[in-house]
Picture 1 (cartoon, rainbow, N blue to C red):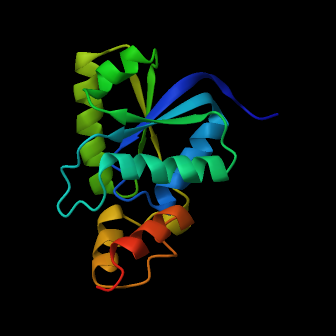
Picture 2 (picture 1 turned 45 degrees about the vertical axis):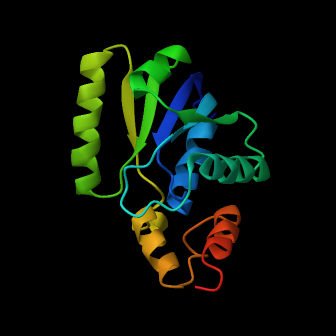
Picture 3 (picture 1 turned 135 degrees about the horizontal axis):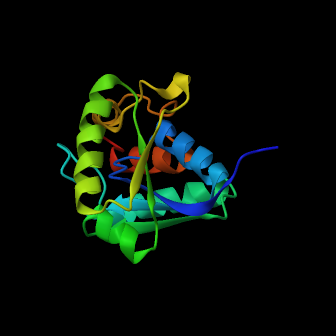
Amino acid sequence: MAFVAKKSVVYPGTFDPMTLGHFDLIKRAAGLYDSLIVAVAATSTKNGALFDAERRLDMIREDVAGAGLTNVTVEILDTLLVDFCRRHNVRTVIRGVRVYSDFEYEFQMALTNRRMAPEIETLFMMPSENLAYVTASTVREIARYGGDTSTFVTPAVQRRLEALFAGK
């Protein structure tokens, strides 16, 4: 018998671009919860951002639909995460951690969010071990130099990366 939490959860991030590691967490979290909201940051503070929020939303929505994840919605995150959670009546946040440095940052953010909203819990999930080394920043760099990113991203993301860097 499989364990299923009968709640909603939010998975926030920049997703610029979404990697297979991100998508792995989306699929796994969707299997644990009744509903999952992928909250896409409206603006990216990452160096060398590639896609605006609408393109990131479109790519994730395409992949979610293609995978048949009917309990997943994708929305813009344009406020504090705790306010987004309250507005959507969600008490659980999923954060991906690959390595210790991820945990350090995510731990600080989780404690900050807890201070602002003690009713909201943060759960850390690790991607599948074969995807643990994949980062969006690495994908951006490979794409900028014309490298093959197809083993790091979903087909929807790959098509848009190819279109973005065509002829470069």
